[in-house]
Length: 148
Figure 1 (cartoon, rainbow, N blue to C red):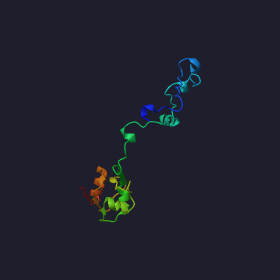
Figure 2 (cartoon, helix red, strand yellow):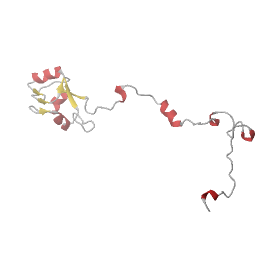
Figure 3 (cartoon, helix red, strand yellow):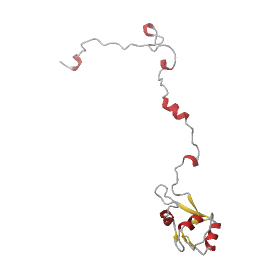
Figure 4 (cartoon, helix red, strand yellow):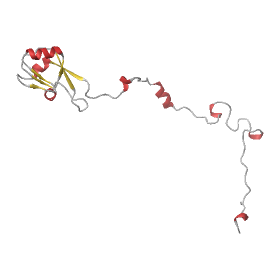
């Protein structure tokens, strides 16, 4: 027996052609009209509607990644005067130890000294930004300022 002598056991069945008139014409087993009767129909998922209904946060400032540790942490010179003794060094590390500032995201914040309050002690300020009025108050009390 050779390949050209093989024949199927049952006769081949023709595929039913629908939607071309005859017994399976018109709606072709899809009911009538509407989205579901069309070819390539797809129902819109509910999640998409939920996402579309949320407010959009457009613009660079609102939804860009937050720059941790880049904002100045305000500290008044009155608070520094109360927390430190005469002749002590005021630095970011020292302010953190005294509880006047806190780390943000595990990073030391940038500190800015503001002129609220009085300075009565000679303080040695190290690597802290400050306002002009705060600088004048510290120098008037006999303190020194060192910025890298």
